[in-house]
Image (cartoon, rainbow, N blue to C red; front, top):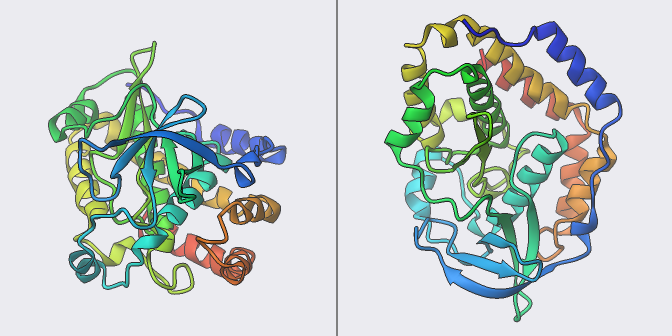
Length: 303
């Protein structure tokens, strides 16, 4: 049976890792990347309506403030929260940048600008345009044993922990980017945080927890995943360590210097988020409410 890395060693490695974190490149704050051409999304997803070819030659999945096709009423009924759809690009940018600071796998992102001066969140498309991964294909990755299965299971738990923290209600089998590498391992990169965090009125000041919205995509897909994984003896043997790693991932949020969070918040365009809203967010992050949120998620949703 493949053994997961010793948990004490892992926690020690993470502590050393955060003692001298890699400096974030904050150039994205001041420079918006021009869009050269647009292509309508073939998937016709709820939030990504366009793909962009940018001046750097990269292809980006775009999310703007006014291009969503979401059925807001149905979603608000499920989560019992007011949704502010124009905040989707803010949510994307904030979540991506926090995950970058944790040095976890996530596509690169930029703020893009079109010829009219409209701003968009842009997620770099890794290794070609990601189509929606079929349910059967994703399950094949989940249930096919390999010597790296424990890495795959770890990634699933860490992503779920972050979805809980960001109150991301829309994690499903089609918004992971799956990249197979030379070792035959399929790495997971989460995308689509447009229905999380700032998309919800009063987040994070009003407590919102996925445990209270069992009918959202995130909870339904997570339940399906676990029902399958619990048939795997290796998964069961390592389950408590996966949970501990997920809980520890949230603890690392408290180790991020406030100046790093300020860099992220300052990088959000003022037309998306006012200076007062930015200050309110920084004050919340620097308060006990951050720790209280993390502790509740750890004890109730990652138990």
